[in-house]
Image 1 (cartoon, one colour):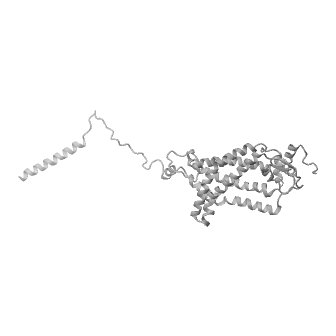
Image 2 (cartoon, one colour; image 1 turned 180 degrees about the vertical axis):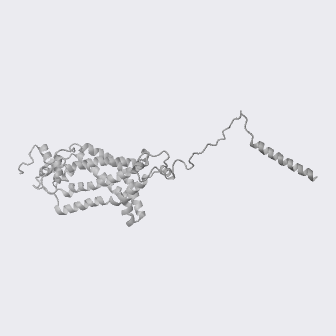
Length: 338
C-alpha cells in the first residue's frame, strides 16, 4: 500500500512539471489578433515636460514680477490673474497714501504766493468801460461744468481717501455710510460730467489752439513775477487748462464708464487699469483746478467779472490779453490811457 502511494505521488509531481514546461512554451497561433487593452503608454519623463513652478506660473497667468507677463497675452491654461497684486500696490501704497497731498500742496503754494505777492491788481485801475468777453451760453456751460466737477471731486476724494481720513476719526461705520452716499452721488453725476465736457469743448475750443506768442508767456512765467506778457483771447495757462480738462476728462469719463458697466470689458486687467487712470487723472485735475479757481477769483482783480457779467474792464483786457483787446476794439493796447 505504501509503495502504491509513493508511485501516485511521483506521478503527480512529474505531471505538474510537464504542465509547467508546456505553459512556458505556449505561443499564439499565426492568425491571432492583438486587441487594444485601452492602456496608453506613459510619457518617457514621468514628471512631465513642465516643472512645478512653470505649471503654477501658467495657472496664475505668468510671473507677477514680470510686467510683460502681467499685461501680455495669457497662456491658455491661465485660471488666475496676478495683476491684482500690482494694482493693489499702486492703489494702497501710492495713490491712497499720496494723492491727498497734491491738492493740499497746491493750496499751500498758492497761500504762500498770496501772502508774498498779494492780489494781482489792475495797474492802471478800472476805467468803467467794459468789453464783452463771454456769451451767456459760454458762462452757463462753465458754471454747469464747475458745479458738476466740484461735486465729483468731493465725492471722489471721499471714496478714495475715506479709509485713511474718515475711518480713523469718525469710525468705520461712519466711513461706510459717507462713502456709500458719495459713491451713489458720484455714479449719478458722472454722466453729467461727460455732457458738460462736450458742451465746454463746443463753446470754448475756438481761440484755445496754441500760438507762437504762447512761448513768450512761458518764458516770462505768465507775468506772475512782474513784466508784461502779450496774449491773445486766452493765454498759455488758460489754453493748457482747457486741453487738460478735455483730454484728461475724456480719460476719466472712459474709465468711469468702464467701472460703471464692467461687462463692457472682458479683461479684469483693463478694469484695474481703469481705476488707476480714473484716480490719478482726477487728482491731477483737482490740483490744477484749485490754481484755476484762485486766479479766477481772489488771485487776479477783474478776472471773475468775465464769468459773472460776461464783460471785463478795458484796462484789464489791455494788461492781460492785449492782442485780443486790439482785435475786438481796433485800438492799440499800448496807446496812452485816458
